[in-house]
Length: 176
Image (cartoon, rainbow, N blue to C red):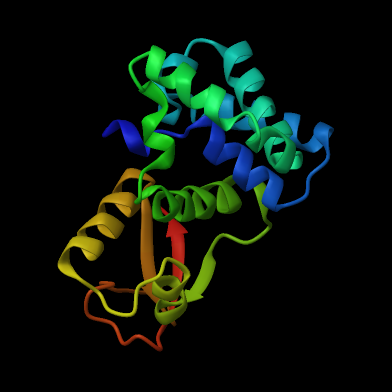
């Protein structure tokens, strides 16, 4: 699997924080993720549960007090440069779209009571600043869906291709 598609600590923290869970619920979700999707975690977490929990909880703290911690960003950037900029993937342009599909997968498997997430194609594009479907964007979305084992469907569970559906079509994403 391409490294950027592994579940990362910041992505999981962002998804959990967007749902407003308390600590106990977050810990239960993290436990379930670790037990069932361990091989989809970044390699350094696959055999280190303590580091996985610790790093996700670090990011949840960051997201709660983002304003204060942003003051520390220059020091964090200097630390990243000191370790060869290993954390650079967090700031890449495609991270938001990857986070959308990570969110879809986690919502379906661990967070919501529904087995799908529905969104209009136009809304999905607009959410990330796009009005049109370029071949590069569509390839990236397809890669994300493959990495997270997600399939897009139209009404009536009709499998669809995001490149060819109408912009006003409602798409349901399901984990397959």
